[in-house]
Image 1 (cartoon, rainbow, N blue to C red):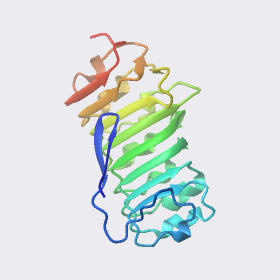
Image 2: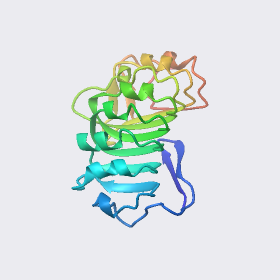
Image 3: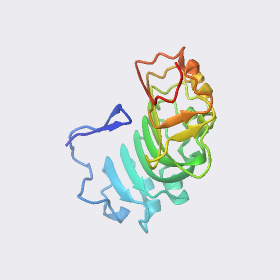
Image 4: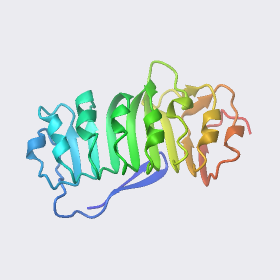
Length: 211
């Protein structure tokens, strides 16, 4: 069964048709030891008592885990085929992702002050969806210069109040960005001028910006 998700207006195909070795179930797995070594897709409870065993699943391509922990990041640091990662949070640092050279799509719940710069060092990363949890204020500078990104969506974890950022200026360095979803975001300077040189084909923003 194919899994097609739309992340903030950005279509992401998480996996193809079910194949031998995929691990699907009605509920997230609670014990890694029950997962076959050939698994390519895994939905896992972050409290699994044998979480470090994830590192033996060398064929994993799609991994969903909630909540996250330092143990998890150590376990997935060298999964050679991982291309889609979904993390329930809150994520505070992404230092453990640096070795995931095939990672293409990331969706995660992050704290407002999370260090997200490791994303800029993932050469194949194309789409990122961030759900930001307060308190604190998010700044796009936390993403570094992720010029390889093609799609970015960001929103508060709870949709009641828009996410406040100082400016969109750091996004000017995202030279490959084609899709950008900022519908639940407000900027202090209210300016979209920083996006004028990006190759955007789809832009979704709130009416709080000046044009």
